[in-house]
Image 1: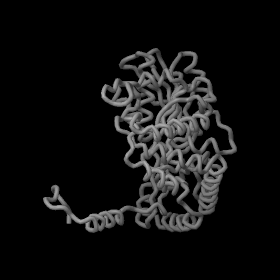
Image 2: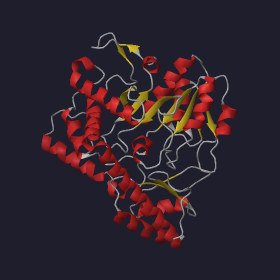
Image 3: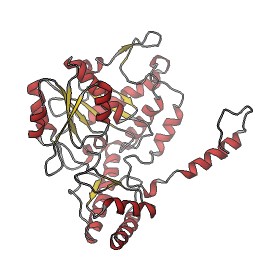
Image 4: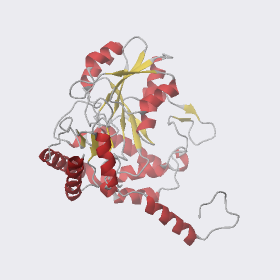
Length: 382
């Protein structure tokens, strides 16, 4: 049965649940997903989410408890990103956070019809931003390591540039741009420097390597970080943090009939459940727990790369984090054949077209071995 209009009579709860279970059965399962930067939420995140289902952070005076949880969450993430005094809010995800960061940058600069300079590897949300805010999105070249090329950025920046963007964990390759070098450009010109760490934000702090990418870099004005990715919170749970309250206050709008006078978020109604879920995971796992999760994902990454090399497949770059791009002949065909075998992989863009695999906590060593067997078979049959 497929309803085309609201039923005249009520349907029993049992019948409704039967439909929902059937629809859930059509969804694909995470066990064979290599294509997603999301994963199954931690069990405590699910419990926290369900506990705060009806709460609305858009009207925090009515829900002071969950508003306090959001404030604690932002403080913890700020400390994690090198600025305990950072301000921000829990957004719906990286796209909203990136939009808001550039809105704040535009308000600071007071430049209209200006431009932003982003790496060629930037997330597609910046194309949306260009359209929404009427900005020219200038895309800087990448170097041989697929990080943004600093000389290309310098060539693109001009007196109408209101923001420069660096990526800490690129969507396709997991690479980290030289944020400290970008900061030298933006500080001299008093330009907003935004770091999109939607994926890397919950990875980089727990790696042995010390990349210079967060608020510890003087000049970084704002950071996007997504708890619903490697933070293992429920969807949707993004994060936007600013170094200073001044930048965030530029986003505020008068809210005449709510329990607060002004609101900085893009969306009006915001789920308190997402903030509670994020808070619960962070204080439950702590730094040691996150280190274990990241260590497991990096071990999966090494296992995949080593196995791929054994069958003659090399990565485009040696992985920086748990993102792998594998060079294969006819990647579109290979991907199609792998999907037929139940493996869900994605591809990177030209000119470095490759199979893209994300090694998330839901993956296992055993499934990686099964994947590699199928990959080898597919390649032999080309």
